[in-house]
Length: 168
Image (tube, rainbow, N blue to C red; front, side, top):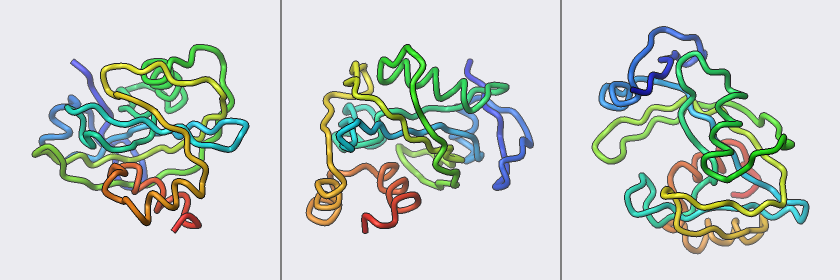
């Protein structure tokens, strides 16, 4: 069973719960999220599988729960390997943290986002969570947000509005 640390809005641990309990009860818990940016400055986004929270929509290619007792850095490295196939040491930077309150799939997914940028030209190794990927320039992504916002998942929209305000 996967346990997560329940945190408050100041990112202080207040309890421990299973991931399922955290979602069922709407408990705030940590999630690492990352965009991948290549040397050409294009962003790699994945299209979510049909059983995911943003089914068929573009999303950050890396994202997942920080397990109880795990550091943010450990979670980022684990998720980057599981969801993108990154195994070697990779360049990255912490962009920021923000609380994302959301109700999806009949559950409350209240996540304390710990958001990173990862810099690599490696293409993703897709798994069951994603069906395809596409690379976007900032201009392409801005056009997609304006012209076809329904193709962008809510989690990615939150990241873009919170950490890349100049795209809007």
